[in-house]
Image (cartoon, rainbow, N blue to C red; front, side):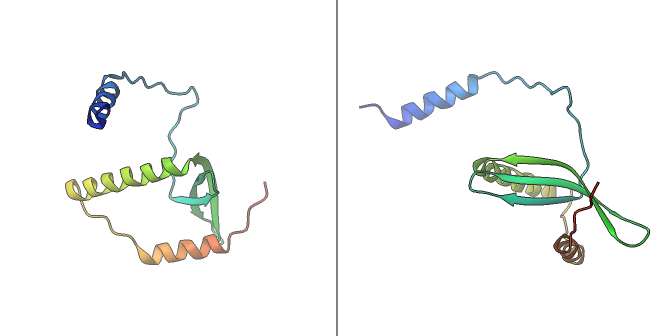
Length: 118
């Protein structure tokens, strides 16, 4: 019978030996987003990143920049990684505060959202 610890150790060593290559797509870019809207299904989570802008008539324009679709497993791993990095940021740089008033106003704005026709 094969020892489970031996198998795990071999797999770990195999992963550590793997060479990782990173290439950027030709249309790679960086966007700024101050809003994220999430939708989900049994198969994926979709995160739509947007930018909010207050117009002169005091209405809000939300410009959707990109939607990223992820598997539920990937989202769970991403959340864990984000939490670890937020804790590190707060430990090494400064604590982060969530503005509850801003958050409530945003939720109200999204709740009243009417898509703009182009």
